[in-house]
Image 1: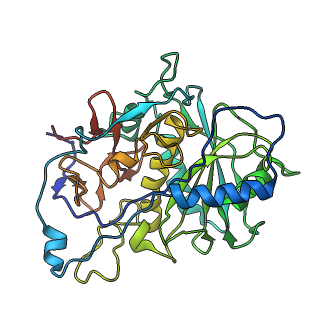
Image 2: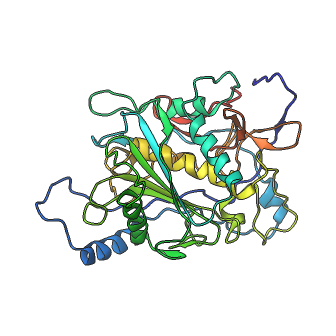
Length: 369
């Protein structure tokens, strides 16, 4: 059992109503062509494959009895090893040191930026004596290797950032225009973001008044890679939105709950920012999958790269021992009543577990057995 020096209590599993993140995938036959497709062609292909491949955070099927929805049968398991066929498809993983470049799109208070920055800095923090830790969580991601047997890097650091306060591409973004935002950041006349094709991850975070295609309908975040015909380079990137004004009950659960479920109370967030604390787990989800499947041809379940199930998808909504089905698993409550499952450098976070292909189930640093 997990023991900590300061007082804490085990928080009994709460129901999971929503999936955190979304991916978009396009097919690739792995071949190289001398001429890049036109933007019009890319748009058509992008639209077609997104309709096929988008995974989302489904809202629950409503039951007549809300008590049944909230407190239904408990199952003690962390994922399923019987049906999961996670395979390596011979593509690269991020073995070089990862540098995360954040693009802050819209207006972001400095207090919110600090929470997100600390989480990223905590991924490979040297001092992880405050167990369970974010760096302990990343050790599961590190288990994944490439063709040469090289593991995903331990080193994840925060790199240079770009502020796009004036919303260079408007308050409504499509999936293709997200790539244009990244292009603007890496080609800016003043302080452009550096180009790191091997270890760079470009993390676009949109403010709470910015709408992204499908956001709040079935999307909280996704990852993919940029097209050279748009950006000039193939760069792994991820997008995550701030749901505070648009759909906190969908994307910030369990720190915010859907309006249609009467009597269900949100949990207290560990950093006093429900929407940002909800974003942390989505960011973690996407960074883990960028590292293990940066070009949509490495680690995933299923035979179709346009509809992959990746290492974080397999553990959607599992935050602790006993998680699975409709339950998040056993989490921790500290003296202030906040719910979390791992420590960062100074703060606490709630982060979903990821699939461990060695033992063939979801694992996390706060496991109780």
